[in-house]
Length: 115
Image (cartoon, rainbow, N blue to C red; front, side):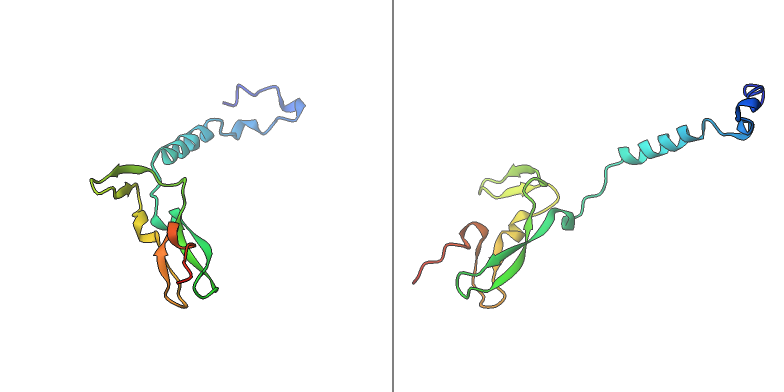
């Protein structure tokens, strides 16, 4: 490799004889192999805390919800129960107020009759 760079010392390129030119290619291959491996998705990565106000006691609390764009619908049972990839969304569909105990499914939580 020293012969390739001979004569360049007058241009300020005298220390190029010890330079590793092809080392970064191996690092790029290793990084590409790591990126090709699928990352393990955890259930906690698909959840977020949503703030609710209880219609029964008017207190504010947080409950875990599934991020809408992060899960993929795999199938649906004959009883219309959906099966999602990586998470069981039905575990997080029920909302319970920790103060008064009022509970309902997410889509019905804000609708409480006066009676």
